[in-house]
Image 1 (cartoon, one colour):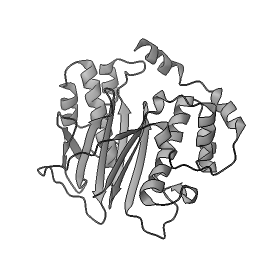
Image 2: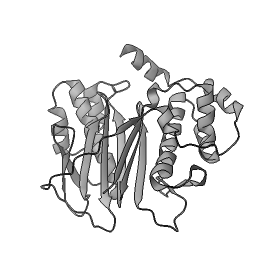
Image 3: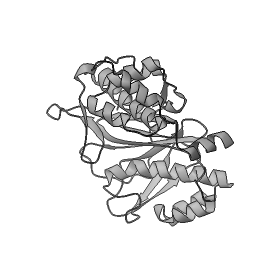
Image 4: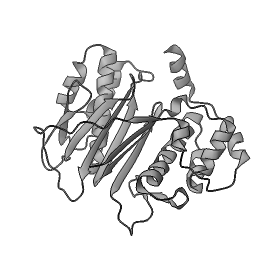
Length: 286
């Protein structure tokens, strides 16, 4: 079964005027306008990278010319092709948080992906943060998180569980911990997990997780089409697909402009602060 895993480090991307204006020309007008409405440059860059990842995948792996790619959003807000008449063998999804935008695609399967950066809680201590988030995980999961060692290791374990859970939920129709119908048991090798469930809330392949770098956790789960949810905790998982890091040049290698250059779009972007003050202070102190 074919799979694609791409990652773009938008947190270290400082686009030049020509790069930003070219990128804006290569996405659909409504997406360009939506990206332009972000208050902070960090969010605008993440959103732009996500749209370029999607278009690159559809163009290069599905064989649809860039100028003919028409993306829209499903009722749940997931990216999809507007052409629903012709069936496509690949399903794809994106996520962006922290310093990365990531894409996961799977042939013949629905796919979910999530990325999270291990960051200190805003104004509370780690124990207080965990107290506030108590309802997000089961007692078994909290036991695993809080036995990880130092507070920083516990926080990393928290985000490991978070991204793995987030990849499962799109297949269940549940909220972050709606009814607590499933519980994760993560192994220590950042490659696999077991999924224990009751009722029929389970995915065919438990989430596969890995690290993009020391601070960014990413997880992918998929469910084969036309299959009911199956719980297979005792079966070995296939080897996890590695995320390939892309440069900006690789990100736009197949891109072609869809509109004329809009100089005012750069003027607006260049005036934005990179991130909220609290995040900037965290970068300086870290």
